[in-house]
Length: 284
Image (cartoon, rainbow, N blue to C red; front, side):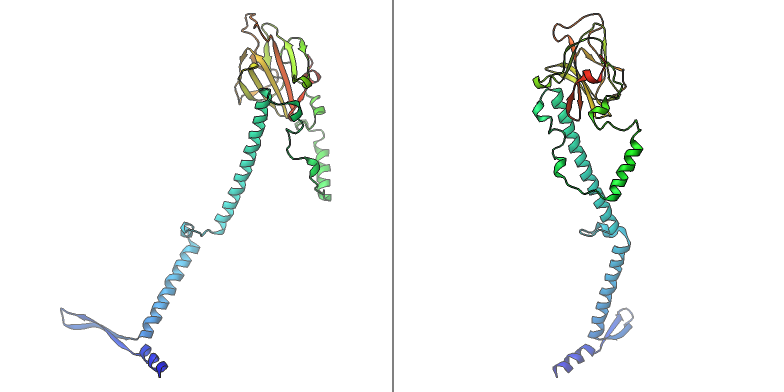
């Protein structure tokens, strides 16, 4: 009885009439039932939901909704995150590199720390098996790059093949002695002589230091850094590109005046964070 009564209520018809008061007549009238009202509301809801779904899927409006992102936007976001991580790693490496240069210039690096200053992770602890395809690629690359003069020097012995210029005229008055903290050579100052870059490169440091006066450092493409200390005047700034034999500084004012102290040019060569004896690679 209850089911039959509920069904009869759903199917019971009601007349809905629109009455015009001015003309005192019914303009529109039709019959509706509670079931018809429920079905109409459900269908209207589904229709609106479907339209909204299509708008979100087929138009860029969906990207404005919190928590929703299409595949293209997700791929772009992942790609940007990877690029940001790579840039952060490169910035960290550059910071460490510049910190090493600053420590070398300011004599804040000891000979005991040179062995571990280049690579914090030992390569011997990395065990990666080389596949046959990788071995074939390495062999082909080595054969192709054997006579490539533009390749970077990978070892100290390769630097001996470079044509390095003499930084200035004069005799060496103190040689290379890293055990006593002397990481370069002292060249006797000759009046009126200038300081030239030993090779092509980019100036990475050019400023006055408390211990060594005006100092300039040049980064060369063979992982080689040349540092010139006790200069009288610097003619290049950080970021300037210089060529081998180009004047980068002076040892006097050009009138024969010589300083009372440190009447010499101190030259240092660094390769992969290790000091080298300039007398081996430059003909003084």
